[in-house]
Image (cartoon, rainbow, N blue to C red):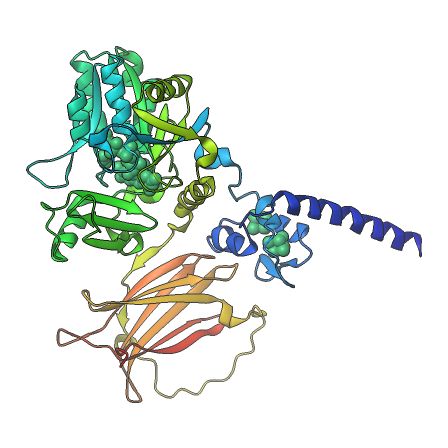
Length: 497
Ligand SMILES: Cc1cc2nc3c(=O)[nH]c(=O)nc-3n(C[C@H](O)[C@H](O)[C@H](O)COP(=O)(O)OP(=O)(O)OC[C@H]3O[C@@H](n4cnc5c(N)ncnc54)[C@H](O)[C@@H]3O)c2cc1C
Ligand code: SF4
Ligand code: SF4
Ligand code: SF4
């Protein structure tokens, strides 16, 4: 064996050792190359550092596409995912710092089985009974406007119980907090979503913060977990149109990707929707929010990870931990140790929220122009011009991806077109036509000057004729001047027989 071969073998042994070692440490984790592609590469936040390809024997760097490429069988070990500078893999980055974590549930009979474990309400009851607070800021339902949130100053345990339950809309809780400070309440428990908690913290810590200057109250922050909230003006009319009587709804609950509405707290939901189907009613600010678990609260309380009628709780400050344990000692709550939490479920949701904003680069367009305005000459003979510049050699089938959905209400075909190649697609032309027998009709053309890597644009194509929805065959083509045709497919939208 030559000296060179010996060196190579030793290097490969060393490499194998470190690969196996990390692989062993990551055993059971589900992070994979697929996730790296979905969260980092396809969203366009990959820095092209090449680390993923450098650490894995079945990955290589695709210089043309500017992304890692699989050249063998991926075992799903997650090593590439865990080296990437853009992935979030440190638990503290996902759910913030905390002193201790618990699974908790109430022991107060009136609170059992209401929202989740009833931990928030029980804590407030304990704080009032022990005279540790003189007011709490909660959110109640508007009696005149069903399920609209009204932030409230409360001063009794009975009102805390009346305020139990989640309303999945923004509540202007800080307004009630400032009113409580003005009314000279000195010790206040404040319940809010992560964005509410951030507002209070900023008012304490920013150089011009109102609570920093007029610090007359001690505030205990109880933060709720929050994935998203909805606009009541958009969501509730949709529910009503779907036959839901909001006056009869006693509980709303988001669980495992579904939004449930109940007429009877203990019964089955009267209606359930996938969260995805309600996405359009989501408050736009929530698309930019990265905090699931109220990372800056004294105590954070949620439901994910702890099963029915229980809460996942993080005590983040010394006072938070002390109060929780005392509430349990005095019988308001039952707390179980931290390892009872399904932390992976919490991490999964937290990660989903941290990376969700990477997908907000969609441009909504309706720049469709009737092709007839600018009809190309029917027959034109031209001398072929030799091109001096070399066209990129790409596999055109990989250049764009397309998602489509018929919007029956708007009578349109909603298309989301994504640039799936690692460079800008210039002068992209999307041509859409309805196919009637063998003829094209209703031809629309959209021109996009630049579509950035992994950027998506949305186009609505009208499916209407004389006011009626027309579902037939639709041809979708995409081309660019420099590459030529990169997509051509006919879809049959006719209802399945
Ligand atoms: C908009 C929103 C989104 C949420 N998303 C998730 C999620 O994705 N995953 C998850 O695990 N948990 C989520 N939660 C938290 C969950 O719904 C429960 O609030 C939490 O688990 C506490 O349960 P509990 O049984 O202790 O609540 P309870 O004891 O019933 O106490 C709930 C407290 O929240 C207050 N409240 C109700 N609505 C609001 C509001 N809009 N703003 C501020 N305060 C309010 C009430 O006044 C009450 O004091 C969300 C809550 C909200 C408000
Ligand atoms: S084998 Fe492991 S390191 Fe390689 S691509 Fe698959 S998940 Fe990534
Ligand atoms: S390690 Fe991450 S950032 Fe670097 S090239 Fe791979 S996917 Fe891109
Ligand atoms: S998702 Fe973020 S911005 Fe939206 S309500 Fe929850 S904490 Fe606030």
